[in-house]
Image 1 (tube, rainbow, N blue to C red):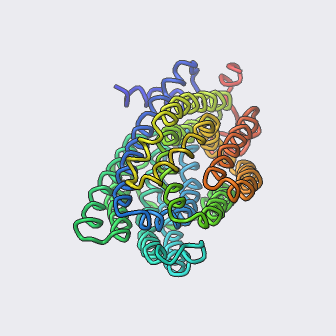
Image 2 (cartoon, one colour; image 1 turned 60 degrees about the vertical axis):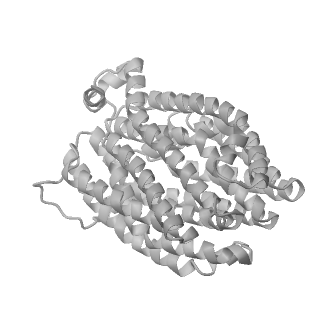
Length: 471
């Protein structure tokens, strides 16, 4: 029933028909729920995954925490490249140009695969010296290096699957990618249990388990989008996977600012790791576990973010700005309400959440303290998460990157450099709390008007007459 209703409501956007507020809320919920469930499953499996490593002690946990920000950087480059093509797919589907969308799909998969081999080579080359550069202590450097080496080797596998899922979501299919993300998390836990404990591989086993789970789910995602997707399957259609200049150029206008965003954000996370590292293994482990525990709050907003990118992209592809603006308000409100509720639960049950991840009482106690600080940032954090998804759907990626640069480097890092030496890990999380509130305010400011919607990549040139009448 939901699937049929989803197609009907997406059809209203693509065909330029009138759409009520209730229908927009309904469509936002239909697209958001599978993604929220997938993100929630991901969070639960991440808890189990992290808890497995946590049972090995503080040092193995700290070794993964040390290089986690660096894995985020490589993943961010992949995500930016995928968005460069998936946003084009969303706009073309909104304009009902499915043949062109399938062309972008083929070229996007091959482009992302080529890029991912380059990223993998960089990661493998840096795996040896990186933990030392980040200030890791001698007892955790070896495990951190092994983890990053194995992670880097699997980047091409994860990247092509990520691209396939992103373009499926852009076409309006949130269910299959959500199922795949959930399956990947389940497989990750199973493989991690086998390699960490049964084979005694420790931290390296955690990386190998994650890589194999990506391999299986990515293979299915690529097969599905190429052969089963209603809008994007290429069965019986002749077309080249060779990237064309126009498609890559369109992608670059979206991807380049997102890569800048990645360098800004992930670079700040690396700097944060350097700031926290001198506090010792307990603080590094508590910081890493608290970040995982906090995902209890923000993962649903990332699911709504995925839906918002699709909704905004297809609305603007169909030339319907007022519909797109209303979707931005609906999805940001949904994220803020859900994340605020979860923040209250996180504040109350912070010690219990940390106890799921670590058996070290010092790690649990310190992690609970910083989680309760972070609870006061979750409402505005949700607005920034979903707001960014809205901007990406519109192809507006440069200004959000500049806003994040100011927020991360001037507010978070500036405050953290002052507060962490004085207050320890709690000082760093106070800085983070302040910064996330500032970031949310910046996104509210950006999305208040229509300038963010003037970066349409492709689709209908002008807003249709009915849409103008609705305004």
